[in-house]
Length: 333
Image (cartoon, rainbow, N blue to C red; front, top):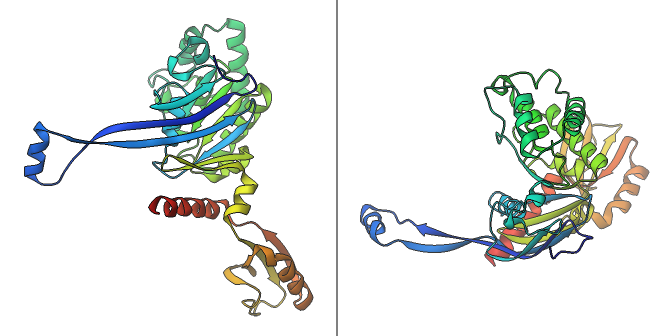
């Protein structure tokens, strides 16, 4: 165990490269490939480094194929890194130390670990034996999760009879029965409706508060990240693009803000104050350079009778799209 005790996760120059066979089009090339295959190396993760302290909740962002899931699998011990080092709780993940495995979990959206034809509670009994939980600890944990996730009527039903959202809740409870100190969450709310997403987010926030657990979260739903994570790590094509506060990401990658203004006279043309992005129920959204916000706001208030006015950062989805676009430009260059 070689990492600093002050760090939960310590990643240095971590890389993962796959060797894959290239396939050419056409029958002749396909026949040649049967006897002599051309291979190439694909670098899924390319020398990334970051550190996470105990109890921190960090968003891990990137487009499809950026290397997020590959990184989580290396940190949870499912994949062996090609280069670099990773330590989690002081352990080297790919060594699969039993004490290490008892302290982590990897939660993947729509991954099934419970037996479909029996109630979730029966599968929980199996997990109790796997993790060697005492009857007292097991009952206390199950009762707590039943309350937090509202599982009382669900864990006695066969898993196959549950809806997607209900199944995700009992799956999450099963993943956390051993009360792990580190949670790797890979799209935990994938496919769920808005109400269920909120419930799952509230549960993870409460688990972090009660247990002091460290959470590394990937999600395409930016509401998950905004609700849970102050800090974000962004990777693109295996490279680290950004590591810092979410608010700093917004400031760094967007030069504009939005002024939401509702004038008394709905017929007024406000294009002279900024780029009009939308009109909805009398509210005009103006896109204004960040450095001109104070001046334009004062001018609006002085020149136009206004019912309401507010200044907002651009939607986080727009910010992330800008980040990925700059990543594409850098890769092409």
